[in-house]
Amino acid sequence: MTAKKLCRNFLFFLFLVFLFSGCGKKGGEGKSQTYVPGETQVLVPEATGKRTLGEDPLLLDLSNVNQGYVMGILKEPGKKINLQIIGPDGVTYKYFLTQPDVFTAFPLTAGDGSYLILAFENIAEEEYASLFSESVDVTLENEFLPFLYPNQYVNFDEDSAAVELASQLSLEAQRDLDALREIYDYIVTNIVYDSRKASLVEAGYLPDIDSTLSTKTGICFDYAALMTAMLRSLGIPAKLTIGYSASIRHAWVDVYIESIGWIEHAVEFNGNEWRFLDPTFASTGRDDPAIQEYIGDGTNYTVQYFR
Image (tube, rainbow, N blue to C red):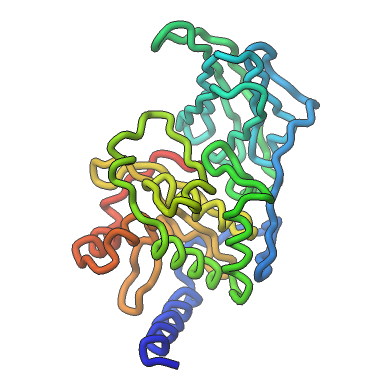
């Protein structure tokens, strides 16, 4: 074994010791899934039709709100729908539907409580007309489900290349923490930040996880969505977190580790200090002390949404 590899293993051992000493936000009794090395645990959102809202041009299926999501389908081609979900935290989550005849999952990320669901139809340029509004009471089967299922932003299924890769990377990862390290290392080593795409991206952009994996390029949404999907596919709860890094729109990852709890802003320990596990900045600034210092400063991050 090389000295470099010995050093890396020793640093990660220090990381584990620090983590298992009790840092992090505990919780999670009743977690529905337990990490198993190499085993994918892809949850599949369903629209069973037991409870619905609306009809044309938008049908919402509310049958599985206790699983942490609603399903929506645009039933008329050429339409554009704005769906808004306001949870007990008071945050307004906005989604857009333009693709017809396909059910899409939208997460309920604010936990138990009353959610207000509003739908609007685009009628002219930036003008929208109200379709309906409905208050829905939600009691989650467990608090992690919104962060295990795929959704519009973290879109994957059993056949996704990212799911297969997550399985391969975690084959020898005995703990969820080991799997997190393997996935993190892969993404920050193999995915290159696409500055041109970042300059051209428009509002409403949705990550394509397998495209990011095949092209090996992406913007912050792509990095974070890919990592989130890979973790979720292994039964590891993860949040695609959207907000601001200073004044710049940004996305990163929070993750739940069974022995620790939620690691907010998902941090890593490099042997000397905590660092944010922000895959975009980590990949573009691995050898830049200024970037690494920025990642490690929590005041640089402002959370808006969890997807």
